[in-house]
Length: 263
Length: 263
Image 1: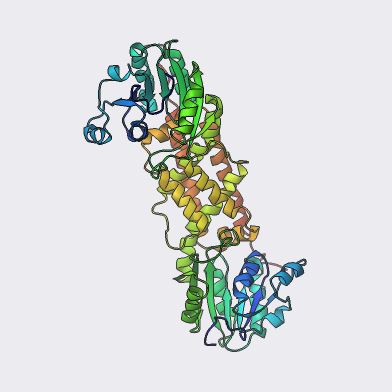
Image 2: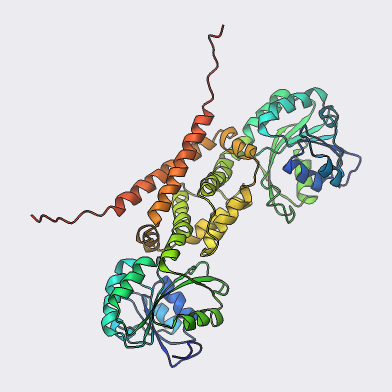
């Protein structure tokens, strides 16, 4: 496995053909002989458009590079099935939004004769609409030595900005980055349609930020808020500070009453 | 007063030479013979750079167009002093971030022989750093007939997008637009330095939104949260929804314990 670039002889198996699996197929199809697995119905048309044959989880698990783009909820089961079918020397990569839990599952279930790299592409179909060049991806080496080669491929073939990190460091930072973005988006979306007429530039930026995440699958929010071990602390901090500010503003607006009885 | 454009014979008096008064001088200086008043010390250098003589409030109040860029806290006092000095036919324009309260003060204190237009430029020194063309300004006619002429000047001479509205409609929409932007910014800034490395595009937008308002004068936040009659309702709604989401997430993360004693 000398190079992942334009090597049509290397096989790539995508596990989970949702929005992100399809985005991956779109960008990786030219570099690998790609197949995909997804138990959901109704994916035949998009798979055909992308030129990616849908096949069984067992078949996909026997490729050279296995890309796990399954939701966190079914992650453990999927890894368990890959573990019994994958071949020695295979590279197994996940793309979940959190890294501590998936890394632990992969390390625990996968055999020692495969390489494991946990990644988090810091983008999705929305932010990658105009291409992925310059976008960021976090890469955590877990097992084996292929991480330098993968990082070079991500940089050179895909033009991504690679951030080498650990699952713990990733989740700590993601708890703020993604945790807060999704939290604020959830609250603002509950407030109803946001104004579009008398808007300031800063509000426009805020609205854009929200519109970029509002169509994310519910599993993404679940993963970010619940499967990240640091998310609850960040969330509590945000809500506590918001509550303090609320009290502060309310007490300040209650001006002392005039002393009407005077003397 | 046929035209405000390139009419060096018309005089403009800026009351309040802070960040916004200076921005106004920069963009209006070529169209009017401009002077300014501000009681704060240390403004001589910037006034000289902008070619705007600093003078008394009385002198500034005798110009053809009086632009009030004073903080909301001293607004009433300033208008009272302008009221006794301004000349018949003068146009008096304010630029406060809220419109109901300043409009009411101007309507109550200024004489019937002047025109009054309440405006809110939906930008500041930060968002106008690369020029003001295409930026938005809300314009509320209060007294007299000069509003159409002013709107034409703002559109044609300054390239602004003019939104004709009423003080009530403005404040309702601004309570959401500015109220929420500043509220979220306040809470996030209290959380400490935000991550810059493993960021998503949506988080970058959020960070940019915050950085645009974080250097606003404290008076701006005061005005937005306290002088806008609709701000408290919007704020309460945001804090209530945040509290609901907090409870929702906490209860969902508390999974039911295993029944260890059996049946």
